[in-house]
Image (cartoon, rainbow, N blue to C red; front, side, top):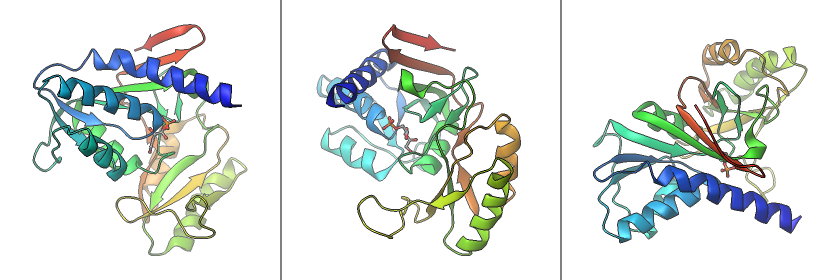
Length: 235
Ligand code: 5RP
């Protein structure tokens, strides 16, 4: 088990490495969230230590504090509304570069930052590749008000696929709900298969309590995927 985890982490490092070659002096960068994006942030930190000038917008408070420790110059989207490149991980990727994101709960800021970027590059280990999206539960960020009513509406969508949505809990903290950086909740929807992500994305956006969902459609330009066969670049 430890070996599998180490191997997966090696692949994450290998996927992050080529992404760092895309970083050029003076660039404005979006920094992703999660254990794969972590390695990219580390590499940006090293470049900054070696004198590279970049300005970065983090996609979560976790990434912000990581970047601060590395003394990476940070900005906000209010100060820097257009970015050159965002590098982020994903929970699932299909061959059209449609993604499920939000496993770490940062999907809202991640989507805003990716949309504000000229290019989004996804870095991942091979376990994230999927023929049809949906094997990873789809995170949906919802406001607290009307939670049960909103969850019922989301579940009604999910029920068509024979599954349920569950409010995400804080790991190891009993029944306490997970709270996003924006102060919202996450409903994880186990659809198992999402044959038409665009249709589902549209339906979810029509539910009033839904702030955002983890389907990233038409946002990723490139995926760098590392695995037993080496590093693959998918465009
Ligand atoms: C966080 C995300 C992450 O990018 C996604 O969960 C992948 O994380 P990891 O690289 O740790 O597998 O969307 O909201």
